[in-house]
Length: 385
Ligand SMILES: *Cc1c(COP(=O)(O)O)cnc(C)c1O
Image 1 (cartoon, protein in one colour):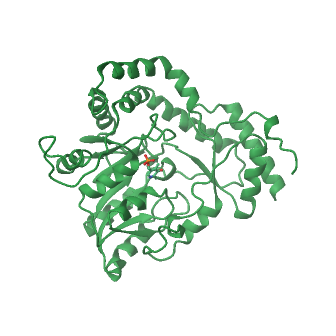
Image 2 (image 1 turned 90 degrees about the vertical axis):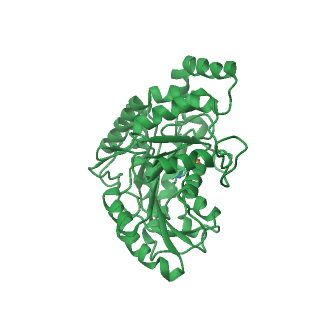
Image 3 (image 1 turned 135 degrees about the vertical axis):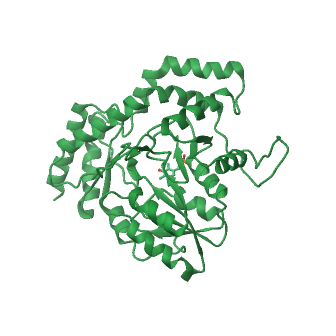
C-alpha cells in the first residue's frame, strides 16, 4: 500500500450543513424549545404554519407536508388512484424512489430515457412510451418527471403530451424546491408535485421530511387523509387505506427557520454555479441550463469520459476534494427494477451513469475553495489523460 496523502491536506465537505447550522443556531434552538414546551409533537401548530408558508412560496393552492419525499410520491400516486395494471412513465436516470413508489403499489414503472444535455425526461421518448403501453397490456396512467440536480424538467413539451393522453403529471421536485419554470415556481407545476426535506436537499430539515403540492382541492383532501391512515372526518373513521406519513412538528419548526434564509441561499447557490462555469476549462462538459428555467442547483454535475472518471475522482480525493456520482447505475439496470418495461433504448441513461461527476455544492462555498476545486480537477484531468 502506498502512503495516503489524504491526511495531509484540508478536507472540503461535499455539502456543508454545519455552516448553516451555526448561522441559525440561536433561532433553531428557540424554535425547537418552543415545540418541547407546547408538547404537540404530532401535527402541532408549526406544521400548519409551514404548510401555509410553503404553499404561498410556490403559488400552489395547498401544501401537504409528509414524512419524506418517497412517501410524498407514494401518497401522490395513491391520491391519483394509481393501481395494478397502470403504467407510470419514469426516467431511468434518477434516484430509486421515483420508480419504487410506483412498484410498491403494484403498478408498473415504464422506464423512459432522458436528454443528454439536461438529464431530464425526454419528451419525444415519452410520446413513444405512451403509445407502447398497450402492447405490455397496461393502461397509460401517469408520468413522474424528475427535476434532476435542481433543474425543472422540460414542462413546455411534457404538459401538452400529458394533456393529449389524459395522464396525471406528478413532478418529482425532490431536488428542485425553489426552482422555477417560466414564471411558475416548482410546486405549482403538474397535478401534483413532491419535494423532499432530506438534510442535503436545497431545503433540508434535520431528519426525513417532504411535502406534496397541488391546486386540486379533491387531491389535497385525499392527501391529508392518506397521511393519517386514510382518516375521514374523525380520528377513528377510516375511509380509505392510508399510511402513517406525517411530518414531525420538530422538523416543521426547523424548516420554518430555514425557510427564512432560503431565498438568500438560492442566490448563493446560483453564484456558486456561475463561478464553477467561469473557473472550469472549456474542455469539460458543464451543466447546460435551459433559458426558460431557473435551477435550484442541488448539484453541479459535469461529464467526463468514462475512462478518466475514476482516476480523476481518486486524484481529487487525494487533494481533499470529495466528488460524487449521481447515479452510478440507471434504474432499469438495478436488480430490483430490471424486469419492468423499457420504452425503447435507454442508451443516454446508461451513458450518463458512466460519465457524470458532481462537484461539491452548497450555498456557502467560497471563491477560494472553488478555485482550489477547479485547479485540482484540471490537474487531475491533465494527469488522467
Ligand atoms: C431525494 C429524492 C427522493 C426521495 O426523497 P426522500 O425524502 O429521501 O424520501 C425522490 N426523488 C428524487 C429525485 C430524489 O433526489
